[in-house]
Image (cartoon, rainbow, N blue to C red):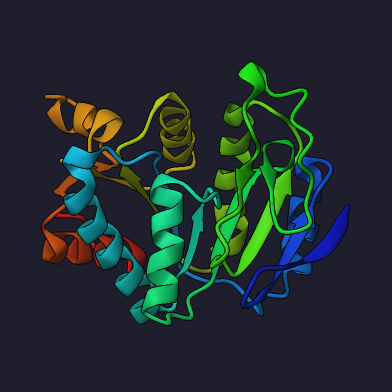
Length: 237
């Protein structure tokens, strides 16, 4: 396992590269976060123009919650969709909550980072890391589905002694795996309707898992209530 400081235009960000999931606890200790936190796992992908306004408002609410509660947010870390939006929101508001990006080393790049994409499907370029995250964990593999267990396990380690919640915005089949793994860990899930794709699909289900709660993306007060209920140990209503 190695560590590296990434030089973005206005900041240095610490990044760790664990070799196996058994290394995850040590990798997290290398980030020197100074303890454990209430944790918000933010799952989502590309943002459709039709849902952009509601999604923006929801991420604005989530970032404010994290700042007010001194919560740590885990997200995908790349400069696209929901993952970019949370980083930009943190920067624009000068928030200080820890924002940890967890993604695949083989699919991303950064200033001074790798650019070889010969092994990528369809000749796609590597994704850029979003520069406003506070920390990164770059894990081995080239299949996005591999990342979900790392994220779920990291949330468990980082929230030791506290509570954690998963929030779904839009989402795809990779997101579905992340939701399933969260539920296996008995981590409550809040799916934000009107953000598209998987989140809307779940919101329309007449019967769903008891740990899944639906909130409209535009209803900031309801999102605040639900996240507080989970992270402060109250009963979800």
